[in-house]
Image (cartoon, rainbow, N blue to C red; front, side):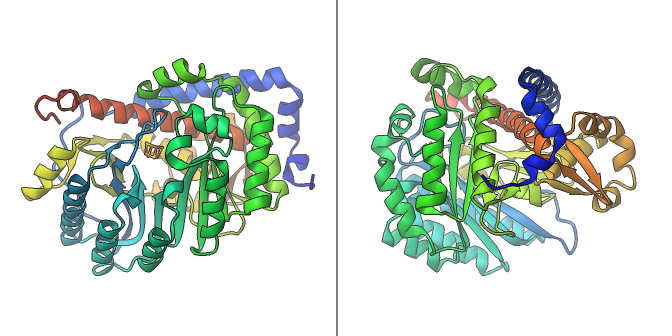
Length: 450
Ligand code: SF4
C-alpha cells in the first residue's frame, strides 16, 4: 500500500485503534444528524409554491432535469420513477422543454446541467431534442447525464456524444453476480461480464466516465467489495467512481428486510475504509467524501459545488435563495400544470438563518474543503460566530482542522461526513415518500392529488 494521508493523521489512527470508541462515535453522530435533519428536512405544513422564484441578476445557475422513467423498476431504489411508456415519456419531455422555456423567460441563465432519473436515456431522441432546445438559449459548459449498463450501446453512446455530454454516469451498483441477482438487476441490466464489456467500450468517449456503486448491501462481504474495487481500478480504470452507502427509506426497507436481511450500519465504516484505502492507493483523489476521481476538476456532486440549483421536471428539488422547493410527484399533474402555463413547483419551505448556515457547512465540507472567506461573505460575517459550537465539537473529535482560511475534513472526518450525508439523503428519501403520499390516491388508481 502506498503511504498517504491516513498515516499522517493521528486522530484517524486513534479512532481505528479504538474500534469500540469509533462505533460509539458513529452512533452519536448518526443520531445527532438524524435528529437534526428530520427536524429540518420536511414539507409538512409548508406553503404551496407559487412557481419558480425570480433569479438573482447576473447569476448563472445549475439546472437539474429529472426524467422519471425506467424500463424496469429496481426494488431497492427510492428515487422518483415510473415504468417507461413511449407516448407518456414523449409528452413528458415536451412539457420539460416548456418548463425550461418558463425558467428562461424569468431570466435564468444555466451554465451547467445534470440530467438524472429514473433513466434519462430511455428515449434518446427526446433527450437530444431537450438538450438542443436548452443549448439554443443557454451556454451550457458542462453536461452530465445518468444512464444504466443496458444502454451502453453504440447508438445511445453516439447520440449522447452528439449532444455534448461531458460526464456519463453509469449506475452499476455492484459487479458481483450474486448481489446483482438479489437486487433484481442481473436479468435486466446484465451480468458482471457484460457490464464490464459495456464500460470498456464506453471509456474514452466522454471527458468523465463515472460509475455509481453501492456498498454495505445486506450480506455483502469484504471479498466481494475487493473484487469490485479491483475491477474498477485495474481492469477498467474508469475516470471516476462514486461509492454510495446503502440508504434505506421507508419505501424500500420492506424489500431489503425480506429479500436480503436488514441493513447493518455497524459494518459501513470498515467497508468505507477499505474503499478509501484502495482508491487512494490506486492513485485516485477524493472529489467528495464518497467520490474518487483519477484527475482533479472532474464533475462530481453538484450539491457540494453549487450553492443554489434549480430542479425542473416531476419529482425535482431546488434550493434557491434560502428555500427548498419540490415539484409535484404526480406526472399527470405535472403535465396539466405545465400545459396550462404554470410550472411543476408545488411546495416551498423557507429555511431559518441557522438552517441555512448548517446546510452550507454540511454540503461544502462534503467536498472536503470549506472556504471560510466565502462563507463569511455569504453570511455577513456570522458564519464562524453562529457555528462556533458545532465547529469546536468537530475539531474535538478530530473531524476537521483549520488551515488558514480553509476548514478541511481530516481522514477521520471523511467517514463521519459519509455518515452525515447518508442521513441527509435518507431525509431526502423521506421527503420523496412524503411527496408520494400526496399522490397516494392517484397511485391506487383514483383522482389526482398534490
Ligand atoms: S436504480 Fe436506476 S434503473 Fe433502477 S429503478 Fe432506480 S433509477 Fe431506475
